[in-house]
Length: 298
Image (cartoon, rainbow, N blue to C red; front, side, top):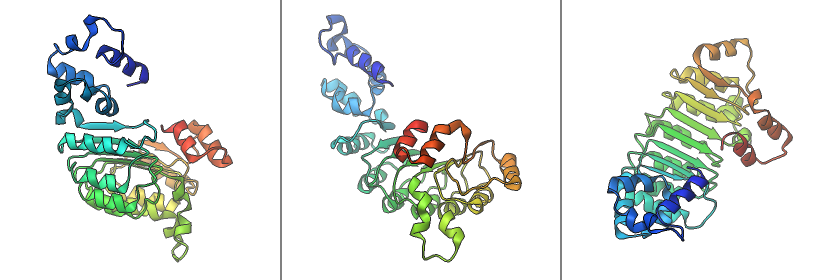
């Protein structure tokens, strides 16, 4: 819901001043609880936790209903220090019914573990711009997500070794996204390895060997080479959508292009011209990887 709609919603339920009796909270309370719940749900997690639950006892009762928290969206909320506590409260109120979770900025390994211990039914997890989430947190959390079908990681640093564990612990995983320009420099982390393929294809090989049920894969800004790409094509027989924009180590010669055309319905190649601004930003270094993300994926 955009900000204008949320503002109108606040007026409707009486958050703003100067309204007549016909739109007062008392009149609003005459509605059936299911109707009130439907309206409050559209406010989003932040507004419910910050404002709506405090209006009256009835609203608090409705806000605490686990059905209100099957999906928790905490994107585009900035860097407020209380967001992690609010997220924990929302997870508690879900009482294990959480299905979808979206977090920007404030996720940590500790928060992921807290969520995983209370959300075994989670099917979709998206984390963006979280420097305090890494392999350790994802490995531990994945043990408690047996039903996970979608995992999308954007600008989450040091996420490499966890891919193998996630693939094993989440056998139903169908969609996976990893967007981190740090992964283009994976070779620096593998300087002692004698196998050149390992240096550049560590992530892609881990995906090919452990996420064999994938239907949709976005591996963006990665150091992958043709070796890793072919491993993915071999290891993920159900793949329908593949996005490798920014994977400049991939060279699409005739044979591999033919394999992709035969196997993948939706393919975005490393130099996809539909994202000319993306390529310009990456090649020139004129903006940060976060700016690039906001241009094309935010």
